[in-house]
Image (cartoon, rainbow, N blue to C red):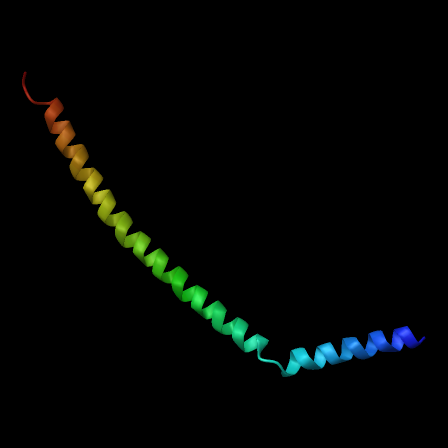
Length: 71
């Protein structure tokens, strides 16, 4: 019975520490930071992807014009 009481008290103290600690606030801050970094990566990928698509289109047009040139 004594070991059970110690377990319950330890569990209760852990719950109180979690409720009064700042771990939740820190986790929220990190989550927001990760979200902003993800948005920056997605935005950069969209801009870079659009530019890369245009570059490949120009390259394809140039190569296509070489194939149609008279020999």
